[in-house]
Image (cartoon, rainbow over all chains, first blue to last red; front, top):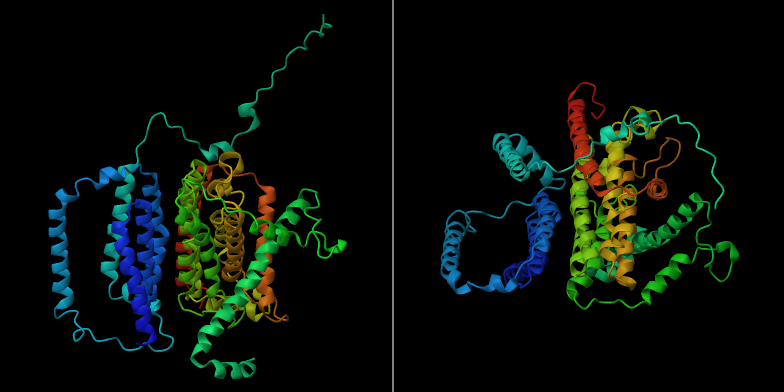
Length: 205
Length: 355
């Protein structure tokens, strides 16, 4: 077994165990942390495939941003773990059906002619100075520019929809306008009034 | 150097590469930790002088008066080492211990791709800039996990503040780095530095004028300010604002576990300063033609940036939380996007200086 294979099995073991813990961990925060671990390990496996851009993007996007917000939400939820455990047997049958379907689909795609070892031979070793990131960028912005733009538009629509759904203006909310705060002059706030001097203070009785 | 190491290399055979890599890692980490320790002293001294005080001046080596204060970081470290690490009884123990490690590890791991001089880098990878962005984005886990695992309201509020703040400023930082990679046309940090040494002014012997900080000036300022916010330093230190939530996520930590958070904060400061120097201030390049390039220039530029961190802390009052969010989302991100488009147009125009 060469070094690369050893690394692959090492990473895969961690990935499988971490993914199992994601669904078996009792505490949702622990489960989310195991999910982080499995993303990170998956990044390592992609790195073995010489897809360093995708691997680092996975860590950057999912570990660095998505899971942070996910944890953020999970931590603030007041989850009753006992209630979550109810209904295991009732949900078992539909769950098994979905799992079986997914397994069948994976077998159909991965086991058949498209992805077998004969259909997809190992790629040639990259030449020195080959940059995966550069190649990916070149392909995205030349050959696949329209699908890429389309994906970007879909994402943009998603962002706008998410903001539109969550934005609500309440009448009683108070906002500050920093521009106005900065523009404030003394005359706006302080009024100097000329008044006659007070009477002389009387001695304390 | 090569000839000297050759016999050792023959002796170790296959084990040479991992052993030599570990040696190189130690050669980076140990001086770095030394810098972190003395940065804490520098901070106290500089702020002291700015406030017309002396700062720490008592703890010396062997009682030599002239070295007053120089042993202070070592004394502080020893004190923290010998303190008990109190585990709150209702905390989530494993995560409570893991959190300081998660805070410190990314700030050290990022140094793997920092080029100290031409060719003097642990891992000269092509995706260096991406690696930096990915690794530094993981530092937030230490804070979030610490806040949650402590099972304390103060700690939790601190970690929520931190998570929101770091995610907000990371976007602006990322965009600032995108402009740098656009003009450098490379993700390799060594190439980014080398690219800054070319141009009209560099040929005239004034390399300082061809560094990225002039054409990308708004990005330079913005990257540094976002870096201050990322590291939770004053004036963006609402995460641990002592007048509001005591010490934020660190409130339940004692002894060395607390010290690790402290180390992580200072290691991050040094990292941000080094990155600013590499991306915008020409890294190891000498500012003028008649002086040689070298690692000392990077050290000098990093020190200069670090001084800014201390200066800011001594100067500005703390931001209010909604103002931090406003600055991040409504000011920094639009500015970065505008400048990104502007640089793109500039590069395509005949006036481009990056040919």
